[in-house]
Amino acid sequence: MEYNFRPQWRPWFFQMRQISACARCGNRHRQTFCFAASKKCFKCHHVGHYARMCVFRPNQEIQKCKDVTQTKLKSKSQKDRDSRRIKEYFDSKSLTRSLPFANLRDSAFKSCLDSTSILKCELTCVKQKLSLEQKKDESQTDEIFNLREKLRHFQSVSVENEKLRADVLRLQENQKRQSVNMDNCQNHVKHINDLELYLQRKIDFIFEIQQVYEEMVTEKRQLFNENSILHFKEDDYYKQIRELSIKLKASETEKEQLRSTLNQTTVYQNQNRNFQSQFGYFR
Image 1 (cartoon, helix red, strand yellow):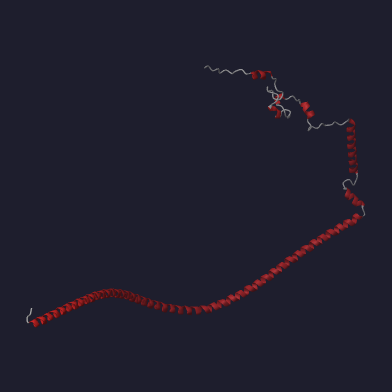
Image 2 (cartoon, one colour):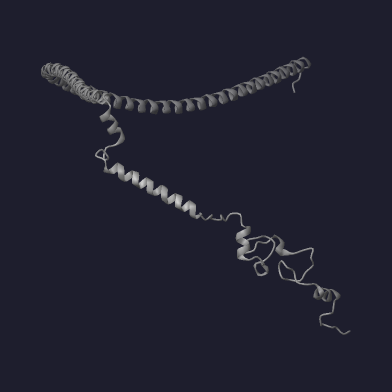
């Protein structure tokens, strides 16, 4: 069987050659489907085609773009009007600067013309003086408050000093008492030492008694052991005595039996003898 590896001719190749190129992507395909339908152009930034197939011109883009603002040019009459207004403004400024009160502000000029301005100045001066006096009063009140705090502090310090003096006096009295107590303590210490010696002697005596007691306990244990041994021996002797008594009873019973048998034999013999004596002969 022969195999043909050449590409076979298909009818749709011929159909694709007859289809014209797409206006969106530039490739040949069916009109129902195109990849560039949802793509954005890099030149005009519109959706629906690639940049290589872009047809828009820059002038057309400026006209169609809504974000671009068109600048309006002024007419000659408008320019003349603006220049005239600027000249009038600068003339008025130059006139005001030439006057002697040009450097003054409007509020200062009005205050010079106004009759109540003097009273206002005096009131402001009085207010300033009052404010200064109030500040002085506040500073004085602060100083008074600080002095009161210092007095309280000194009073508290004096109270603490009195307490310290009382504590010092107490300590001195305690030292005197301690000096007296030290003598008493020395006497007590001597007495305690004597008692300790006495207790040591008693302890030694008690220790000796304990040793004697332990020796007695050991002797008692030995005697108890010996007594127990003697009890065991006594029990053995009692057992032997019981056995001997049983044997004696058995021997006595045997003796009695023997005696009874002997008595019977003697009685029988005597009867025979009596019988033979009657008949005149003996066996």
